[in-house]
Length: 165
Image (tube, rainbow, N blue to C red; front, side, top):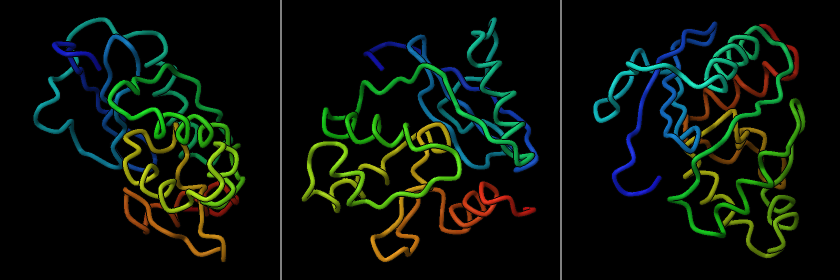
């Protein structure tokens, strides 16, 4: 997000609850799990929405019904460091239902000894689900962390494994 660029927000109702989608002219800026409404600081949407946002809202609805979805929308990653952008870009390629480790993600991003730094990047991911950081686990198979809370990480992994949630 560049200086002076407006962030617009839209709340989307899904079977998982209301999700807040914040976006700029560049793309999706943040997705919040769950929010009854957009947080203060994000003005409510009041203009024509981009087609990609409408598709994302529909995809979120499908996702929370247990349907495999491959989120495809422009992202506004401008405020991330180059390292974080690389890690998030690799993470975005983890397919629905797959699970990978922080070490795997570090190696794929070209920094094989940076698993802890990868964990920090995942913790700062503003767009969970679209960049599926919930699919990244510890090397021993443990959950690790999740910015939306471990309840949500477990719920999302179970949903992708076909469980009723």
